[in-house]
Length: 156
Image (spheres, rainbow, N blue to C red):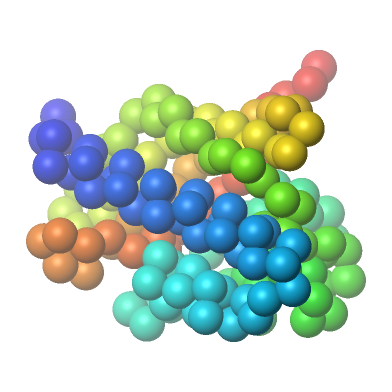
């Protein structure tokens, strides 16, 4: 069983991730520089400085799996032409992002969270997405994402 401290660390990291995605969208609308925010996302949320990071974005068809910072930026910003299919998930203008953890587990220094997250746009339309996030402990009070798998629910 995962203790409350671990659950709090996971939810705090998820909240930071969601807040940064929203901030990136807001900054984009105002034509502000996105460099600091995207640097925060890559260096303060994801574990690029600690280990390899695996990413399976929600809306990716041709480049389904990503491991480099440039591929991450392509998905979130859609402006660096690394993956032509990317239109910029973070700049779509999300108003809120809510996580609903189904389960959080811990083994050694690896934590996993699985569930649904809900992206609300400026027209109050909600996009439900399934996720699995992997986290590593970089300190007793800080987690970084080393696995991010995201997909749309089965519609059959």
